[in-house]
Image 1 (cartoon, rainbow, N blue to C red):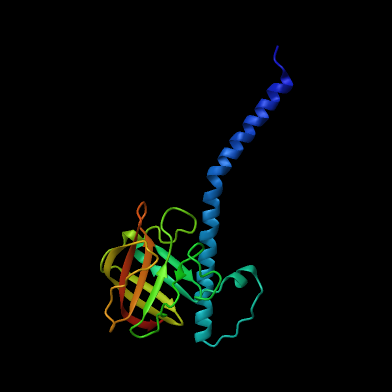
Image 2 (cartoon, one colour; image 1 turned 60 degrees about the vertical axis):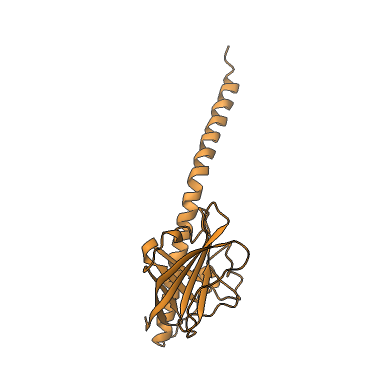
Length: 204
């Protein structure tokens, strides 16, 4: 004889397992979509504020969560890998490779003539692996940085691997201005270093 109560509990338990299983697969997708949307809003807000400064428009600051979180001082854009990501001031708590693209301490900012602007990011497949496709960059690919009202256009001129030791040797001409991008090479104990030379600087 079938126990109806026991049968119903099995059905309920099975249904809960199915719902949980679906949630495990769907939640990361929804979360990633949310993160991408937030990033788009932050980037849009960055450009709006920069343009407003240029046009001397007075903006009434609305104390929203987005305003409080968005302290981007610049944007990194790499069209070949469809990357557009903001970065924070070097002293900001969000300037952390475990959350965002990180400006390396003692790095020069993009407006420093003959300086070296250095950014690091995680590779891999995690939520904060912003440089996961960086390995697809090739020589002569274009990279752009938007900072302090200017668009800095760079060209990749050198790519090489270095052992993970906590230090990275940067091969550069001291008479030129560079952007350096650093990430880990998946499955190895090496990092990839991309050296990009400044081609032009123009207002946006």
